[in-house]
Image (cartoon, rainbow, N blue to C red; front, side, top):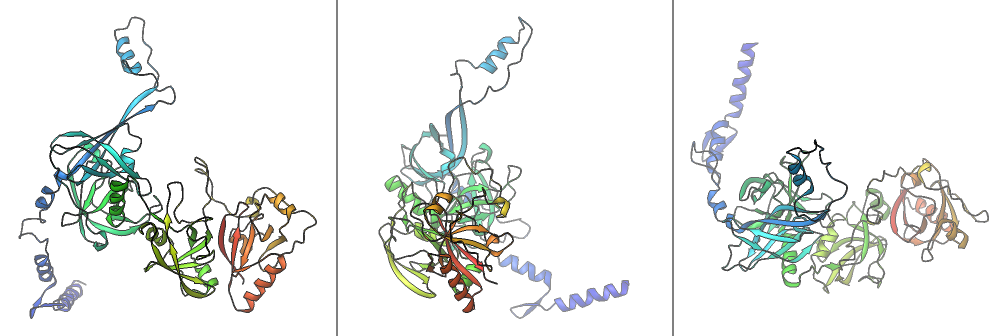
Length: 527
């Protein structure tokens, strides 16, 4: 056994001895590793440990600041109960001072918080996160040398969680500049500087772990992920490349413990730089707006539309009065390209539109009726009250509702109240879909609460354990189109479904409306 093991080692060494060749010399694996390390731009002198980043950090520390905020918060509840002691106890005054306060307004308390930021202009403009200063009554910028300056909020953008502050320095400040995050690659070195846990001027080093992360923080999620240590208090601080340029603004972490586990997220400058410029110039963001509701293109939908692959953004509705309400883009279109930028998945579209100037005329490539078409649209401005292009498949709930909602199983038991159609309807049930359908009349509108603007064929019942039930179709919803053809009667639906089957289609591409007119696209299997 020992002889066999030694023989294996010899064979492995012999096989590996010649796998790397450099300048005509044959290197062993260990020699090759040493040679590669010596050639690395970050390679230290032999025995000196990792290369130092002190020079890089030294030139950046003075531009990174601490953000200190305070706000008055009204106490809710009675708070801690004051201990009771013997009458005349020497500790009674201490208890009174601690629990009742001394000269404080009853029911209010001051809350302080700390974050990070960085100077982007020597005149005193400072960038940070919106959540660092949101709701603050007082904002103070603390510089590395200990100087403190009151800050004024210039503008904030909740959709990207960015804010710009302004201080009035006596002399020009040390500032840093934005770099191009588009050039950053997974594995590139980055440096974070900030104020973790109130420890200002902390420097950490790591690499870019991933790009384009979507963490469901907002409509424009496109985060850089890094393993450089980011903790509470780092929010709003810069993420630098090895040239000393800001390529991200540290914003969030994933942490079960509250501390760094090596998964941090930064807003890339490809998104942040334009937002910061607009906040400084206008005090607000001025984003392009297309005015459509979109949803992902699934494999089922792509098959029903004849697409080669599941790509693009499916238009499920056009907002009335929006930029494309003139018919240039229609419900059922799949947007494949916007202003020369490919739309590979749904979330690519809101990012591309938001980065485009208001009023710009752009070319949009859509798939319509099985053919690619290029249409020209002029972008409007996204107002604060309006929503960007986003997934229309999610219900819009009033504030505070839906936080503890359980997932809808779409079974017969979970389809809401047992609402039955009036007895005099011409309901039919295409057996292949498992739907009971009826012409939409006044009785049906009243029975299901369907709005006057909704037209089509109403679903009166859904058979359990069918393709329609699995796709989430429910009684009270209205089928507007089947295979991009409008339907007005149950017979229209049946005929159109049969036509699609005869054409060899595997899915029926349906546009379905809720009672309030909210549209979505559903691909129902025909097999």
